[in-house]
Length: 435
Image 1 (tube, helix red, strand yellow):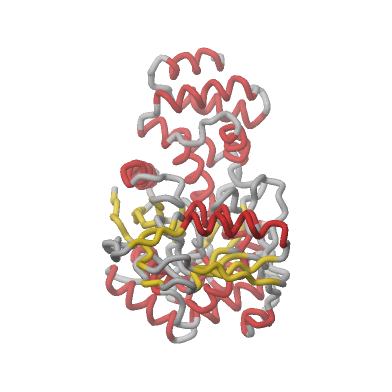
Image 2: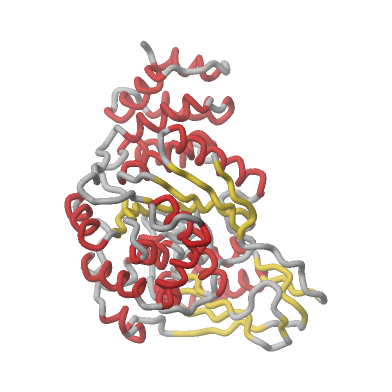
């Protein structure tokens, strides 16, 4: 068996066997197959696609390139959530502890932000002392203690994916549905979960800009998960404006604490409740989606979700003082209010431009090695559909470096579109995709 023969089959539109795919993935992970051959393979997949069986084989080979958690010692079913990423998307922070408070175990493997999208790990690290790089054994211990743990990908988890993703990033093959599916599921299924709920974003701030592309990805994720024996559903959700009001790491933690204490922006609460309802249904914590919604609303209002989050912070090394008294968080040194230059209704907010503005002042990464300033960010004072008058605040920029301010303000002004009439309402949840 030779790598070039397998590449040729896929280049010519053929179907690969499980053995072909295993040969490539095992060989690439071990260093026997060079980058240039794997680049040719990923480009062939980009143009020719993969069958469902091929995608399952790819996912399984990447999954088993590292350890797969055995959580059999923890009673009950385990369920996670995966978001394809957006602007202001802090949902994992209130969601995971709330679902755990409602009785379902949540092992959560999360990622970092890059470009205009934020990452859950970066938000968690805005909490002083919080560790996302804990040993795998400690991850299992915390799950046993409180039913939730939030960590990053380790060298032990899906090393094939880590190596392959870096290659795809520099060879223009990121946007391949089979490769995306294999990448996401090889990490998520390594957690030892029984079910997964996908939050597939669509719109200006999403990876997938159109609802058609978002649905294609959602269908692939759900179908391949089901073929691998997991309960799965995907919610296609709106990212044509940022989620919530806060964009930036510390600011999003503060907004998440508000949600965990029974308040917070309506869209963040709605999405937390809806995703949590499906997770509870899959995990046996609710017999129906409506019962799941009721349970989520209850734990968010009675303080049990907040207490679960406080326990999570404590067990992962974080300073619980800032959780119980958020005024203790370090905030940016300066504020700049961006005001409306005309009256009317907010017709649109271009999410990607808002995300880039946040990145420009230091809240996100332009490159993998960029250093994040956790304190900086944006607070949106007006959202789509709101009435605004000349001189009213649209957004508050919390910043530390004055040299970066003008560029961020210009992006924020470009992002807001103000018109004479209110826009039609767009639902937060666009569609639900099942296997």
